[in-house]
Length: 188
Image (cartoon, helix red, strand yellow):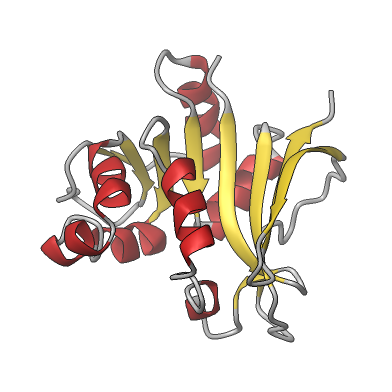
């Protein structure tokens, strides 16, 4: 069975966007050499990527461009070559190579994907998809890049999740710029 992970940047008060859906805080200081090296090693293109439509739109606007290939060649290559799944009830086609559209219930579709052969799955951004996967008990790992900023309000990755699952720390890394990466594994 495939493993389902989520990777997201969050503020120290736990939000992945501010109240206006702005997540630019996650990119402030992201050009730090130590963080860039970590990002390269973490984004090798070995997993299939999962997005909601809003995150997909942001990703497709950047990663397939010549500017992305020039600025971050290794990450761009991995993002472009990875199989991708995007949840949308309104999109008719996806222009980014290796992308499959999914229009069904995310919990059901993700359960089917997990049971099918293929590479492990990583949800990037896509808070609504993350919350639905968590509510369905499908997440195997939660990877968070904690950014040392307080947003005061915004959107939580797990908004509306009624169950209270516990997680164990799998690994972590502290960066000189104040960011902290944590990866939690589901307790069995």
